[in-house]
Structures are given as C-alpha cells and as structure tokens.
Image (cartoon, rainbow, N blue to C red; front, side, top):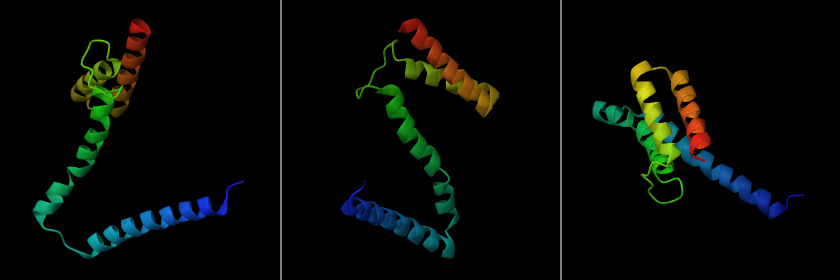
Length: 108
C-alpha cells in the first residue's frame, strides 16, 4: 500500500508538470511569433532527439567508445545509411535492429 506522502508528492509533481506545460502552450497559442522564431522552433525536435541518441550510441557505458566492438555505433551508422538511401522509416528500424542483433551475435 502506498503511503499518503508519496501519493501527495506524485500529485504535486503532476500538477507542476501540467502547470508549466499549460502555461507555455497557452502563452504560445495567443502570441504570433516572428518567422525567425518559427524557423528556429522547427529544429527543436531534431536537437532533442540528437541529444538523447548520440550519447547513448557513442558512449553506451558512460564513456566514449569508438572501437569496433561498439555495436550501437555500427548499427546507428547502418540506420543512417538505410534512412538516407530509402527514406523509409520501417526499413530503417528493421535494418538497424537486424544489424545490432547480428553484430551482438557475431561479436558477443
């Protein structure tokens, strides 16, 4: 059974998260942003995705590993090549997973 302080803490965190997101969405919904800001905001998802993926790919153990045994980096490279050549999301995912599993199976 969950204690009351834990439930209260979870509810407070949910309220703070909701309030901060609602404030920004409500504010941006009423403002008309200049063209340069809209162009700048188009890059936010790509930058956030890159900030998550690159460290996990190049430093899977917490330090940069550019060796041939880094299966994550090789699978990411294959993903990038397949995405570039096919521009097909499912093909990219399947190729990346297949490459990763094959490299893990071959290399241990």
